[in-house]
Amino acid sequence: MDTDMAGVRELSRDELLDMLRRMWEIRLFEDKVYDLLGQNIIKGASHLYAGQEAVAVGAIAALRDDDLITSTHRGHGHCHARGDSLAEGAEAKQEHLNKMMAELCGRATGYCKGRGGSMHIADVEKGNLGATGIVGGNIPVATGAGLSGKLQKQSRAVLCFFGDGATNTGNFHESLNMAAAWKLPVVYVAENNLYGMSVPFEKVSPLPDIAARAAAYGIPGVVVDGMDPVAVYEAVSAALERARRGEGPTLVECKTYRWYGHSRSDPRKYRTGEEEQSWRERDPLNTFSMRLLEAGLATQEELDAIETRAEAAIEAATEFALNSPMPDPSEVEQDVYLLRPPTPAKIEAERRLRQRVRIDSSMRQQTYGEAIRDALREEMLRDPRVFVMGEDVGLYGGAYGATRGLYDEFGGERVIDTPISEALIGGAAVGAAMSGMRPVAELMYVDFTPLAMDQLANQGAKNRYMFGGKTTVPMVIRTEGGAGRSIAAHHSQSLEALWTHFPGIYVVMPATPYDAKGLL
Ligand SMILES: Cc1ncc(C[n+]2csc(CCOP(=O)(O)OP(=O)(O)O)c2C)c(N)n1
Image (cartoon, rainbow, N blue to C red; front, side):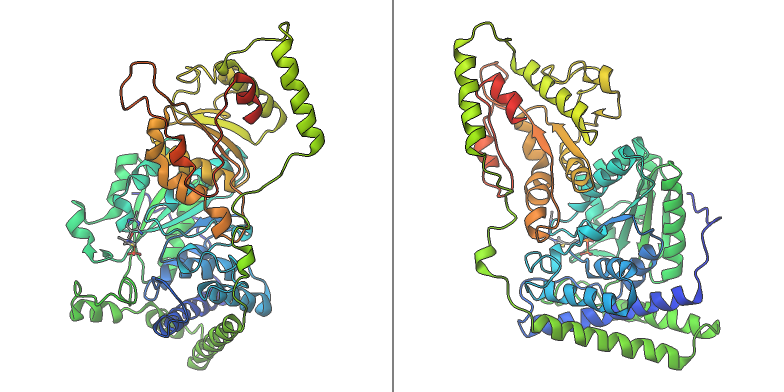
């Protein structure tokens, strides 16, 4: 285990007090959300972060301004700590809380115009690539954002939060494997609050520590007291430094506890009162306050004032939210597709060209593979953000030869052979697209695309809409399909209709090599 803390910057008094303020704001925000849920003012499900404040606040204190985060269904703490750390001045900080509360209340003034709500809050413009309602769904996206940073030769890193339950998903394992193999600058923060909804982690994992799983990927795994923001800060700082040095990812496991049930309706039958009490005795707000007091860094009056001001900030945010308008129903279809209808001149030019293709036999003849290769090559020459990824797309040239020669011309950084991890290929493309790249990912057969369904249909297709139109996900998935080659039902389906059921994805199917090139 690598717990090298050498070089971790010590936090100043102001920074420590700021951390306490953020923790109070999260706690009181969550208490308020609990009330508003009870009054049916906040609708749907909310998963409250109270109890876990030290993790988000400690980890995010270690970030640089250009770093990115991805978050979870229990993400209010991440969103607050990240947004607050980037908001300069009291007014901007209040505005940030206002937008958060408005989002949870489904208002047009919320971070995502009220479309994301509690489980899908994001501020992509400020490097928060968003929360997700799909457990583990954000892990490939973070990994793709790490890949994108590396390809762009940036020194920014990505912080990826998830719960203990998410560490049993394939997304977790596929992501850590690839990030470790490629030394991606991602810090994976597992918030082990002991339960995935009602199921104790110890019942669904042979290993008590999530961090021990890091050994399978040859990366450091660190266990941290998730009730201590400074311990979290130090561990995450060391991991970020490692990531920035190009040494790859770290898995940081924070042992923590949630105060409320999984969601408001959870009677918490699976936990004993004694267990809850023993964790409450370690309430991070109390223990951290005591530490500041004992170290002479704050007086009791100063600590009380932090709490009082936090209370006022949450009240103001609630008032802002409740006085904000609901989204305009006429905007319900906005930001699903980016429709750019072709101009009449373009339609006419296209008509003429097609006519020529039909009658001019001297024109160059191409196969589908050649047409795709040409399109990829042209786009890669034109736009340095375009890169190709997928299984065997490198030296092999793709299962159908559609990338043949590209590896020789552009090298392994732009024509990337991936592990056989379809979900991750899809998710990494989403993360890379949301952070500045233009990935073209090949999934070898359309029959394999359901393996990537969550990443493509839930994250890639919906992020633009659910995050209030504040992100784009400019990526292409290229695949093949259909019967006729005697390879039976696992390699012969025509699943294109399936993919048309997810708003946000353009499904195109070329009828000729000419179309294939043009569409790509
Ligand atoms: C893929 C998926 N499976 C199941 C659920 C339902 N669900 C939502 S949260 C949750 C528990 C997640 O546990 P964990 O990852 O430990 O996070 P925590 O809730 O403890 O923060 C479950 C089962 C879901 N949203 N997504």
